[in-house]
Image (cartoon, rainbow, N blue to C red; front, side, top):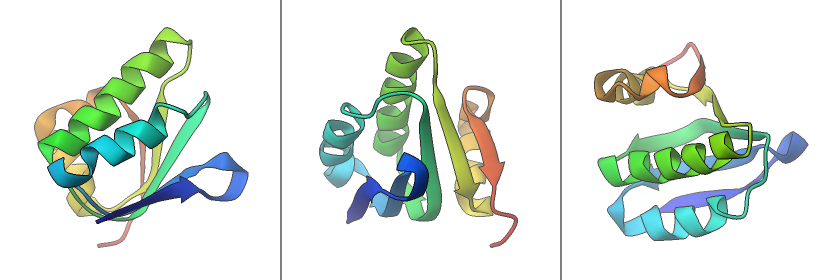
Length: 99
C-alpha cells in the first residue's frame, strides 16, 4: 500500500510500497502536481518497475514544462534501485545517508 500526499513546502510525501497494484493511484496523484516537484521518499520501502514508470512519466511531463523531479531522503536500498536501472542519471537525487 502506498500513502501519497503533500507535506511541508508542498513536497510530495511517498510512503509504503510503490508497486504495480498502487501505480495507477500514484500516477493519478502525480498527474496533478505542478512544478517544481520535490518527492520525499524517506518512508518509501519498495519501488517496482511499475513504480519507476510512474516517476518516469511524471518526470517527462515536468521536464516538458521546464522542470523535472527532485527526489529527497532516498534510502540506500531505493537509491540502489535507481542506480541499477540507470535512472539515477535522470533524477536529481539526495540520499538520506541511513539504511
